[in-house]
Every structure is written in structure tokens, then in C-alpha cells.
Image (cartoon, rainbow, N blue to C red; front, side, top):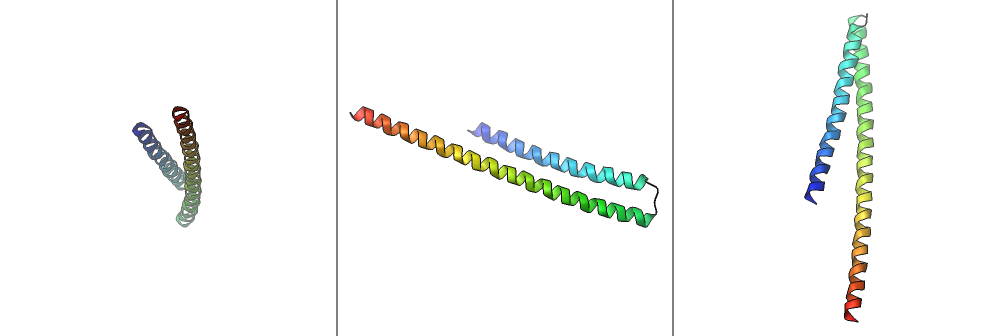
Length: 101
């Protein structure tokens, strides 16, 4: 049981690192692209500001999707646990009845 928890914790950290990498890479790429494009300083700053806002929105959307998926996984796991618990209870009840007869 501990091993599964450890693997789950590693996966959780891995997803965060991936999202962080995507966001940072997007910001750096967009910034370099905007700075390399021929435009005035004010125009470039305006473009950078808009791109950063766009990336922030996408990052928030992605984080919300990941959170929703995580909740879905937890709900599914709880349902599975409840089914196993019921199955075990039924087996114990049957075993107790068969040994008392």
C-alpha cells in the first residue's frame, strides 16, 4: 500500500513540473519572439504584456483541468474502495454463515 502512495506522490510532482515547464517555456519563447520582431519598444512591451496575460489564462485553465481530473480519479478510487469493502463484507458474512451451520 505504501508503494502505491509513493508512486502517486511522484506522479503528482511530475505533473506539476510538466505544467511549470510548459508555462516557463511558453513565456521565454514568446518573449524572445517578440523581442526579435521589428517593432518599437512600446509596441514590444505591449505585445509581451498581452502574451503574458494569455499564457497566464492558459496556465490557469490547464491547472483547473488537472485539478478536475485529479478529483475524478479520487472519486473513482473511492468508488472502487467501497465496492471492495462491500465484497469483503459479503464474503465474511457468507463464511461466518457456512462455519456456523
